[in-house]
Amino acid sequence: MRVLMIGDVVGQAGCAHLSRVLPMLRRTYAPDVVIANGENAAEGNGLLPASARQLRESGVDIITSGNHILRRKEIYDILEDEDYIVRPANLHSSAPGRGLVIYEGLKFRLCVINLLGTAFMDPLDNPFDTIDRLMEQTDGCKMVIVDFHAEATAEKLCMGFYLDGRASLVVGTHTHVQTADERILPGGTGYITDLGMCGCFNSVLGVKPAGAIRRMRTHLPTRFENDPGEQCLSGIIADLDEKTGKTTHIERINIF
Image (tube, one colour):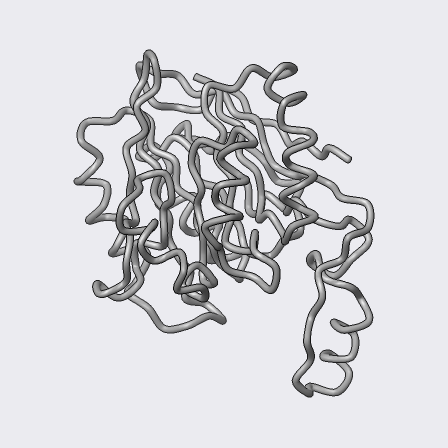
């Protein structure tokens, strides 16, 4: 089974670029399932029904998320009613939506889990304890993919090794900068510290540099604007063995 995973989609420009290039990626790589992180897909971050719909109409099968997923209340009903959006499982139990979904393909079943890190981020339920509970709720799926939305590279690496041999694929999101450490861990789990983003390449994490620099220099409140410049879709292609659940191949992609 082949999966295409796409890093954080940033704003309308990122959604539009994904819409342009995803048909080509489907023809070139023939993925069985496409997963994209959509927590920044709305302008100003978060996810709106319109941006979720655009991702789906572009060919995304499952939308994962992160710390901005609850910023827009308009998405709450969809989080509750639909099973194609995954929100972090270690949010408070009162949060709308679900942290684990089962995707039924034509010839396979896939479990997708979303988690938030806690290093340099909000204090939440421990993601390692949370994943232990969730791994008992996979409904017999051999293939389990974890989107670990976290700040610290060490925390992501720890999660990768913690799940080595138990999950098929552990990918990091959140930093919007693709890392060059894709690998198959000793137990057969595919891993990358961060997928990157689908956003403006010559930007600061998808936003116009001037605003980001002002915030760094002054530490004053600053309104960020998403950069509509040249867009790049970053992510990975991975092949999973349907019988063992292990990753047999993983490679980075960057599509301008």
